[in-house]
Length: 271
View 1 (cartoon, rainbow, N blue to C red):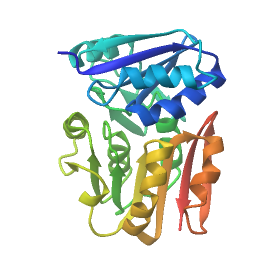
View 2: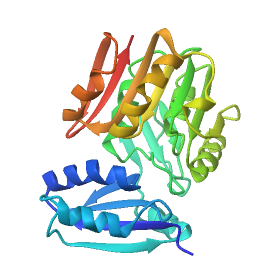
View 3: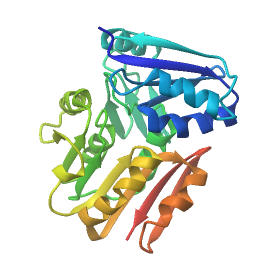
View 4: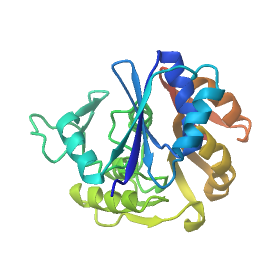
């Protein structure tokens, strides 16, 4: 039985940007833009095709756009990833690769990541943006929380950069499994990843990593602030540049640093 639904929409860049914001509320959690198309994927149990097709009729900028559905099995999705997944180099310092890629050169930060239907390979500008911000800071001894860990890539990067401990959670069982596997691939045996949400985290963290989407962030920012040390930092991404004003309203006054990969924005916020 297929595990996922894939929706492909042919649209211009502005329409694709708006579509991502809308579809994130309808069960889609992985998005790819390729050859003038938006490819959105999510669990087959979470998506109602009738609701999505009704949405595409009701919303003017989606109405009339060519689209198609495809059911995807987990194994087929992974095979497709292996055929298309290329290594990623961030700021000429962080090399993100899969187990089947040859390593021709070592970089200061090497991350071996196999996605297994989890978000976070470094290809998306949001992941690369956060990693770019992370590499500018000292991580020695810090306690790190990775909210919605996906492949575990950000927590693994933090640990390799010197973090003292890393804890992650995700509501997707496959992401929990995949994060643990990727941690071991990178020689990290003490990455605790659990199934669930922010309620699974306890104590205070020096750093919180949250590469999710705008709506989840809006809902979860109060929880992040409760888990953050008084002088701690939150790395946000998963949203567009114009969304930041709405997120910023929920945060106390603090220091902010941006990494813009248009139209996506990554932010380091420090209390």
